Length: 384
Image (cartoon, rainbow, N blue to C red):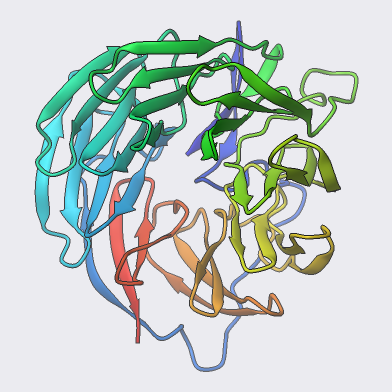
């Protein structure tokens, strides 16, 4: 993915992001691959295929998602595809009339993608047949949130707005508008549903919780305060998807902080300085994150204490971490996967997958690993 700055007048290209760390330093060389004893990690490729669309230089919010027995994919050219996660065989494919900017999101029998013109296309996840088309008032660069229980769809716009639509027919339910800074990252945080609230991070460094039914604000909390003399220095966008565990909410920003918050009030329980744009992961009592310098962190989610950090993959353009077995797995911009020990952070192995920059790996229902390249390459790995 290409990450850019977004302002009313200018788009400034900055560097590669694949659901990953964004602005690696050019002052230091890329970390080299060590020669591990025993070679590559013990995995085998079940299948590998290409969606046929080279989107390496155009990918923003479109990606792949694993749901049930299928892998759903979209590209900027309007192609949406469903494949078997076991075999890679194509289940259905649809060509939409507009260029896409985000998605797919899949829940139940509904698959939704967003276009660069602000259109939402809802289709059957089973066979791809169209369900409805709706227009929002702004473009979105993150997958929509589908609430099957409440029968609603939530859309986070690049202008910091949040829209609620009917899942049944796409009709508009409510919109909540919020001020955006003069300069922001061209990316938006994915909203999450917590209890009866929609929670979303904003480019302003604030976290909002809105009533899911009415859109009325439940609380607002400041994660990071803009500092510095220039607009770039003052950027504190929350791009990574928040994570809720029990009564705690975990949020992290660019050039800002990682924090544990109260779900009910937004009160900050603890925070620490950390700059992250990639989606992060949680397992048990530990948060796993990749920062802007491609350092991988393990942090105690109750206190914010650093358990370990691994700086050895500096400048490799890492994705956010995925927990697979006893390992933390990250991809990089040269198409390599890397395995780190969950307890110590030790770099244990690597494997080359494709020449394309990788997106954040995902786990299938068979506990296999979906590895996606930005050029459309899909690979499923299984542990031996």
